[in-house]
Amino acid sequence: MARLTDIDWQAADAKPQTETSGGAGFEGFLREQRSALVKFLSRRTSSREDAEDAAQESLTKLLRYKAAQPAVWKPLLYRIARNVAVDLTRSARTRPDIQRGAGGALDDLASEEPTPDQSVEHQQRLDLLRDAILTLPPRCREVYLLNRMQGMSFVQIARHLGISTQAVEKHVAKALVDLRSRVGKRVAGPL
Image 1: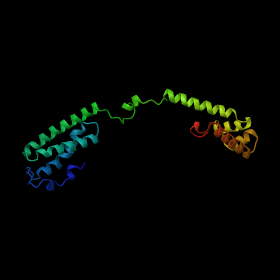
Image 2: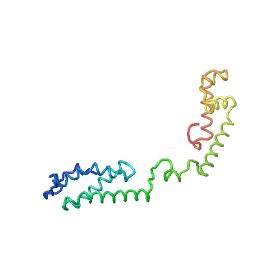
Image 3: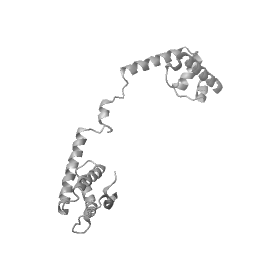
Image 4: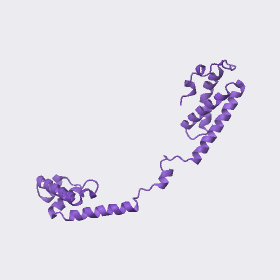
């Protein structure tokens, strides 16, 4: 939305502007009042951004009264601004912001816990994977579990078991091939 100070008032209205006592006309009045209006609305809204938006809306609504006597512009502007601030507050109360952070509307509804169906499905996948791991040859299973469950590197496993790094690589590769053939795509994610 374009700010009122950015609008070419002469092009928007070909009629001559009513002059204020300072000779600035309606456009000058709007420029003079804008910062004071934002300050006024800052005390009545929740943020500076809301105050800026409310000021813009108020100034836009005042355009309807451009032909009125300059003496009524200021009281009318502040009456409009109060009403806009009240409407904004009322709207915020009746339509809670869904994107709020902690304690927001969606936070109250959403749970990080999996649904019962998701829990059952996850447990079934784990059981399938566990059974497949138990069918691996003992040394292959041991190397695979040290790597995947304990987070040990191939070099660490080789030192721990007293075997070569190449042997560790072969055991892990064999375990992966066997597990993929047993569980296939039924278990999502890396094995």
